[in-house]
Length: 104
Image (tube, rainbow, N blue to C red):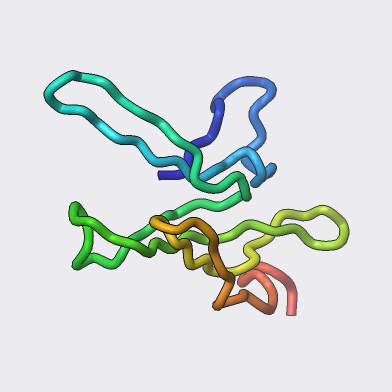
């Protein structure tokens, strides 16, 4: 899951994508403990695994990677492929072009 450190405070800024990081939560159902670990510090959101792998062991996941324009305006950089077993990632699918709302 992607986690935003805080929301609905004067200091929170959803337009600062570096604040949204990929985390893994592990639950010990017998003991009641919860473990949280950061998998990737880069700004991203909307993490997914293949629908056939939901709730099962999986190696790869995908998330939308945030970037920014030269003027600092946030944008979507592409679709990250994350190796959740060995670490690392690649950006095989970059987004190019303009937002739908941008003037033609």
